[in-house]
Amino acid sequence: MTSADIRPFRIAVPQSELDDLHDRLARARWSGQLPGPGRERGVPVDYLRELAEYWRTEFDWRAQEAALNEFPQFRTEIDGLDVHFLHARSEDPEAVPLILTHGWPNSFVEFTKTIPLLTNPRAHGMGSAQAFHVVIPSVPGFGFSEGPREPGMKPRRVARMWVELMARLGYHRYGAQGGDLGAYVVQEMAIADPDHLIGVHIDGGIGMPTAADVPTMTAEERAEWDLMQKWQSGVNHHVLLRQAPQTFAHGWTDSPVGLLGWLVHKFTEFSPLAEHLEEAVDRDQLLANASVFWFTNTAATSSWPMYNGLGDDGFAWPAGQKLVPIGVYSGGSPLMRRLAERDNTIAYWPEGNTGNHFLAMDVPRAHTADIQTFFDLVSRQR
Image (tube, rainbow, N blue to C red):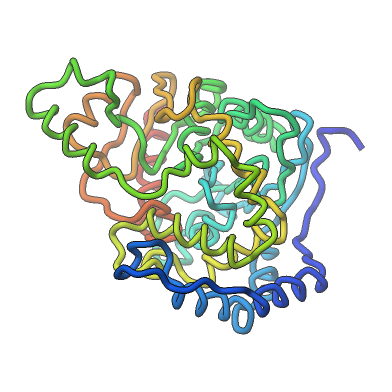
């Protein structure tokens, strides 16, 4: 076997691990509810307790495992790390290869609702929309991909790994899509492999102003900037996991309730348009994602984007690039459009699309339709 070999993979969690999860959930030690309304102090005890009991007694991991295994899965060694990926090919002869990169704290489970829509849109009532051969790798340190063994993992390195993966699969003309962490990776893919990328579609994150942009702003833009500063709230996971990822991971690794509470807190913060988290993320999909984190023991290894930093010096928005056309699910204000055009070749900037942070989970049909529209546009242009 060589390092370039692609090996079939199936998820098969031992029953002993499933029994251990259920036992830990049954023996959970619960805190008292702190004073304050709703989520003012964090995830309410009653809600998390009910969700944990559902995880233990009603959530069917074996059914979720079987559903995930319906998608062809593989592992291959790239840059010294074993990488897990889904590879669902379309029967459409005009299908475009598309690599999707998930976010944090998410996994390949993020895209399970959109895979059938992307590979076979006609069968799902989407007419003659563009079809895709879908490749969904698990980012190193997430899910069933091996974690980094030394400091320094960055989106740029992941991007180079994905370029190698697409070449290894025989795809020499393909698209890339991602949101959250994935938005960083796909922009770096455009920089690393512009000759083979048709285009880059991201959920958001380009054109975001920083303090360095303030001197160039008009009075109206400065007022928008000032308003943006007031919107920032919630637990800053970039600071928390940059400073002490190992410390917090001890609790998330030992306690499924601790892990679930953390994931629910962050998914809730990422769902500002929803009155309740489960309006934005289906309960079983949320718990399938939590189960992947639990069974693969990746609460610690998945924290590298924060402790290594997403930019050259800590946090930064995704890099700009003018090598490959880019589209975004929902365009922002004129200020954001101006800044995005400064650093990117904008081919698609729709207005009016709505949805919460993890669009493939929240609005899978709208997200899929937007991806199809963008790649139909750039495929005809290139």
